[in-house]
Length: 433
Figure 1 (tube, one colour):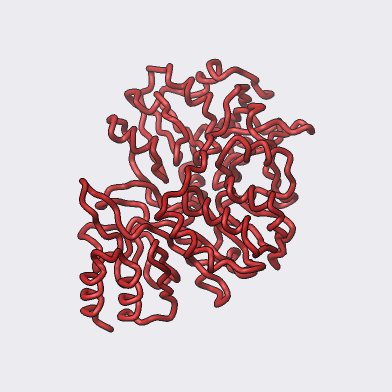
Figure 2 (cartoon, one colour):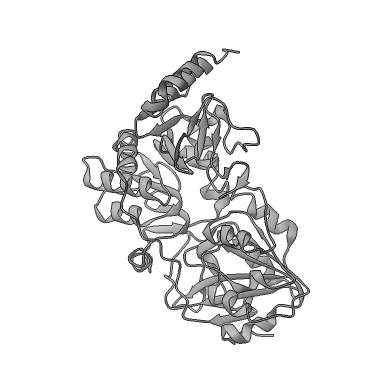
């Protein structure tokens, strides 16, 4: 049988009342198809696998539908509160790939963009699903569904090993829609975020290789670097952002990283503004590779002077990091957090920055995020032995090579002044062994 070309509404009969469906992380979600699927009310047991949904899809509130997510975002948190059957599957981003192989969903679905040669570009997402998409396309008992839209940019991998495209004869169902990728505007940085970014920016020097994510702090760091004196940067980043686009436009990116990927900014997915997606369209400077390559700590460490940026919710005085739960309840996910901390850990010339405000407001009360010990039930995202630099608005604590007592004192020194004496007193009580 050839490829069936349909509208999102016509495509929903692809799914059986009892079925399994997997979609990629956020930007790769076929949004028009998932929205249309919400019109179905006959599901007996539909299990959906995904992560970081870019929108609210009514299908997840239908009886008989359950959603297993590897990364919570605003949509997942809303669905949880709305009573959807949603569960978190602990895994880092690289781990999604073997999980998909193990689960082998009957239907694999993704978003894409038409290429001039008739193939379908995987557009803004390579991630962990590339191999499983090909396997589904080759299996007559499975279905490969691809949603294409002119609003998605045509992007490229590095063939022959990483082609980042599907052949038409692999695709069972081609859904034509006018969907657009999720737009994430860079919100203006707060005074606290600006102070954190300024402290973090001093770790970036000429020739270093950058990894950044979304949010006020990494966006501000990218702006500081774009406007600053340093350059000759490389990019090796799980996520390609609007900030990294601005760094390219400022002429600061040469990608002389000393790896097989020299000359290209390497990423596994992109998310940002419409301006970013337009810039990425047919742009051969940015190449999309599977997450097993991009997030490999060994591959990260091969880059010249890698400097990575991650966030955190809380850090204890030994350097343990909580980054994806609040009070033990799932808030986000692991993603590439630990990989981009562990990679720089392998080279003396590399640096890993974990950035967070020193405090949060909880019920109108200021709460320190630098804590003597993690609260009971806390879930550690990143172990202390991988952590290098912690940055708050009050400075940077360099922990690599420090003893437990030295770490505690350094972290106390960048806590909020109103609680610093208390945190420092706790630091002095930390045992050395």
